[in-house]
Image 1: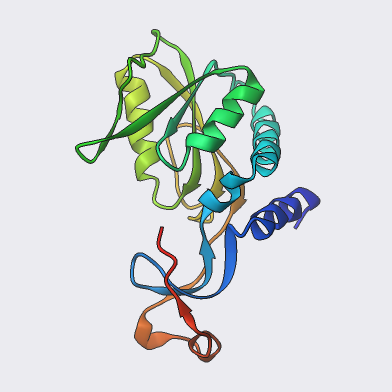
Image 2 (image 1 turned 45 degrees about the vertical axis):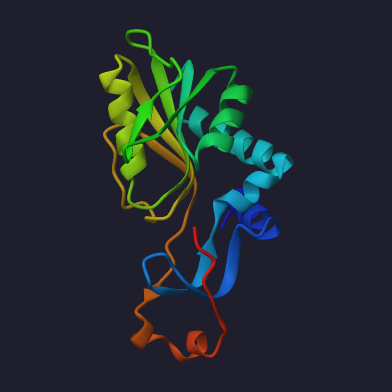
Amino acid sequence: MDASQQEILDIFTRTRALLRGHFVLRSGLHSGHYFQCAQVCQNMAAVSRLAELLLAKLRTHAGLEFTTVLAPAMGGLVIGQEVARQAGARYIFAEKENDRLVLRRGFKFAPGERVLVVEDVVTRGGRVLESLDIVRQGGGHAVAVAMLVDRSAGTLRFDVPAVSLLELSFPTYPADQLPPELAALPVEKPGS
């Protein structure tokens, strides 16, 4: 693990975004790790540093210039705004309406507007895919996806470049198949 990866893990651990113990996840599966990115978003110095690191990683990819950041609510709001602020870009967000992400509040794209989609944590990629569709249907041009954490450990694929600060994939277990060291710990159900 390089120094920047260790710094990112340290930020998540220090802000209690990454916890170790025995957790029941929203899926009902059990895990020895729990990741709640909203915890890091309480600390604006940490958010600022993570955005700085994310932008530095984006700059290593030629042609990923953008003028607008689109973040899906709720998770992407804080990091999306900070990425936009540091990049000097316009910031807009999509929000749920009838269980689908939509642009509201008068947000629109200019034809061909170059848009970066920013999310906090991506597990299956559903909200990112919805956001990419919103950009295209609105006449914009999605140039990339940037995320703090890829919980698929790099298995997700989008039709634009995707950049993450950290790739995490923790083992999960059905309640009747817990390893002894996990079963010995008290159970927490933190929710999402």
